[in-house]
Image (tube, rainbow over the protein chains, first blue to last red):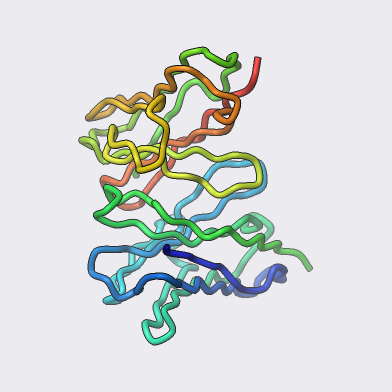
Amino acid sequence: QLHLQESGPGLVKPSETLSLTCTVSGGSISSSNYYWGWIRQPQGKGLEWIGSLHYTGNTFYNPSLRSRVTISVDTSKNQFSLKLSSVTAADTAVYYCARRGNTSGFAYAYWGQGTLVTVSS
Amino acid sequence: DIQMTQSPSSVSASVGDRVTITCRASQGISTWLAWYQQKPGNTPKLLISAASSLQSGVPSRFSGSGSGTDFTLTISSLQPEDFATYYCQQIKSFPITFGQGTRLEIK
């Protein structure tokens, strides 16, 4: 069974860079059939897609965050990562990693449990 | 960006009721639409992909329909465990976008 697990600091200071890693187990990140993504959800609010990548390195970002976001993959560790620079309080949210692919109509069938990141000094 | 608009934003219903949630896309997305259920404190769960394809393990009381710009999620007979927030999502083009959510509450 595929399992995704987010990890990283739960508290980030304003203007600094948020860094999260998603570790994938029970399946290979190096599959041509799947895309790996990040989605966030501020407390009590809706879901916002941040971006996604293919293991080949192709990345796709939300234009609203593009100037601050980098998503990368480490196939040797079966992990992918999110970096969000110059954070503000508006970036406080639960961050989810997730997988979508042709086995689920390219919808996100597998999600990590989510990790709360608070931006505060 | 493709905007996704759900209605209603919230609905109150009773166990056994039939409930329909609507999602409208700002431009045609064929059937590149998914529905998710999220309970408080939990991860979103994929219910339906490709507008009408029920995911494995999802009860048959859930159904989806539509294509182009107008879509519906129907729960035929509400069960206590169905009270949650529901989101639609378009995956036709980047950026992927979600509806604002519909909160289904117990009457």
